[in-house]
Image 1 (cartoon, rainbow, N blue to C red):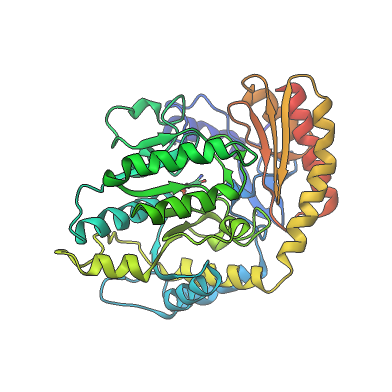
Image 2 (image 1 turned 135 degrees about the vertical axis):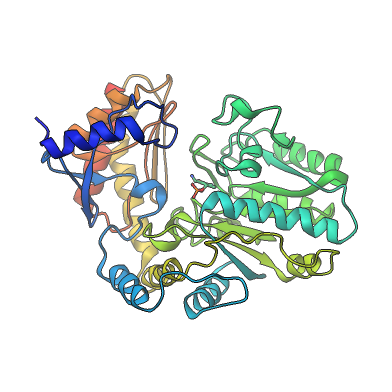
Length: 426
Ligand code: PMP
């Protein structure tokens, strides 16, 4: 039986709290997390701890309650937790921006510090649209992307999410009308590359930018594709005067086995979005980086400023923690850790291939995916994982994991067992 305090919380939660993609009044029964440390979430009902196979949606790469990140937050809290960013600046934002520029693909020089991934995509889109308006080419206001993507839940990002059967189908018809091409195949296929080149050429006069998730399409379906397609996009965008935006919000900071997924193809975008792991999952912060070409273009316009400036941009507390998180990442052999997890997931998830109803098993970096040939029973799959002592969040036909990089070998094996159990029972 749950503790009285927990049942009261759940009752209030059901009555008052919207959860992401949750119904109201609440018909879901969330688990109450009391605290989190390392890779473990401690449940408030006294039933124990769960190994977090989700890293809180790709973000908690260093695990929870990390002494270095705690100290960075405490130290900055003592100085200033927030100050308006219009007309003022501060050391945490400046040092973070410099670090991001230094570690990012070549040419990305300017950083806009936003407060969520979705907003960083909004900013990226605004940058691209404003760039072409400033250059006197106002017809170039649409975006091209491949189907099956996910770029966030605010308006412009929703317009480049999967339009068919995706999470935002509800809004088809009222969202800005973008150009979609088929999602890229796993392996390089010249015929597909040609189709993408042709679409970019055909729509060039109205395209501001191509925006894609490089190498891994995450929340839209956990699909992997050849990095070679990124070169195809770069060449076609250059040939036809179209900007290229990489959304590295999920893939950035090592997740795929490269610091940024674009590095698998040695390609640099004109604009790049990062978020999620930026602060090690501690704070809500994301960033949009762009080249001098984009920044200077915008600055030549009739409105020579980037038209974006909500209240919590450049938050110093988040920036200080982000810097500590990135220094922590770069100060260790992060690639060895990601490769270690990759090897553990490959070994552990091999068993899923034998499970009836499993269509595909794929692993890249610290990402493991089991795809079923049917829609997953989320409640049954989650229960199976929890029984194995692991937190997973299956969706559609997918059971997947992207654990913190500090997950030890035994816990990686446990996560893999939980994914297999969820596949059997979901
Ligand atoms: N882009 C990608 C690739 C994402 O995976 C996500 C989040 N799942 C977003 C954008 C949106 O970020 P946020 O949830 O922080 O708004």
